[in-house]
Length: 423
Image (tube, rainbow, N blue to C red; front, side, top):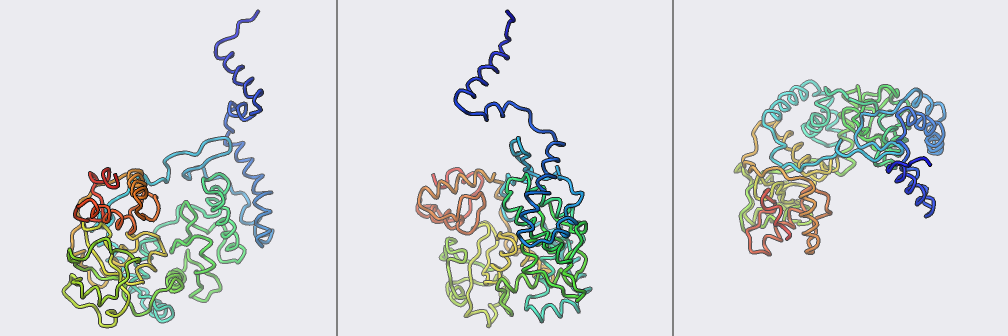
């Protein structure tokens, strides 16, 4: 009788158990993962059948679909892919750290952006005059976003949107999202705004100089130079006007500023930061909140809505912001992003850094922030969701917890404090 090896015996037992309990997935799991060539073939079938059917139902003409998808292959360099029969890769584009806000404001980088931004303001003065009149958004805000998103159009888009979106739609971690964006990109091609091969994007499909997702393109992109195409890749007037249109349609208030750096007395708690705590700017001034420049708040602002912003709690600059600050957040849902844009716009007028220094707080992992948020939630605090980011709700919750513990509220954790907060 032939002798069976231990490994062969183990394999036989596993297969037998799988068959006995009616779980064929045990058999499948022992098969080798498909090769790249096999996955590519599956991708082509998916493009020709499943995705094509979905696109045609969405109104994409067959010729436009064929023109956009002809000869495209999977982009294996994208992050967090999960080819059929494999597990998703870890790492990749995943953000593992939460950086303290001050680390985003590198003086050398900001000074370079200020110099280049001022040059762009001069070069495109006539165009920006027209854009300001039509949309009511200050030119420095528009140019600041342009600089932040694509280096004033100098940064080459590293990917092709059609290929990237198709790859993510087929084997990314968020297939449903990218399938919608893929169809939205196909609509742009069908409209004739750009050829498929010229649709430069980020790895996640953000398009052109303003970095619009395809689903946002139809709502906000404009043909400002009148050539019949909304070309946010090669037309600077189209790109600048599209940014302004985006902000206008999200509620930018014409004639108002975005924010003012201030000093906030200890009698005003940092737990009052964010749009949930509403004051008029006059009320904040009556509580001892003063512009750090020594100037008074503009007369036309005093009876308007204002909000306190403590981006690093009591460990950095503080601001009184207007609703326009939260319009900037519609472009990128981040306090630090909106503050960067507003600060850069201000510095194109007068190149003065923050007058309050940022404290060195160290770097926290997103997981440690998430754990802290979950502990605060368990204690009944509203942190706005355990997402690993320290937004205004989390900052206020930290301050309320500190106050309840008899501590001086700072509304932001140091690296050493993070483990104890919420415990």
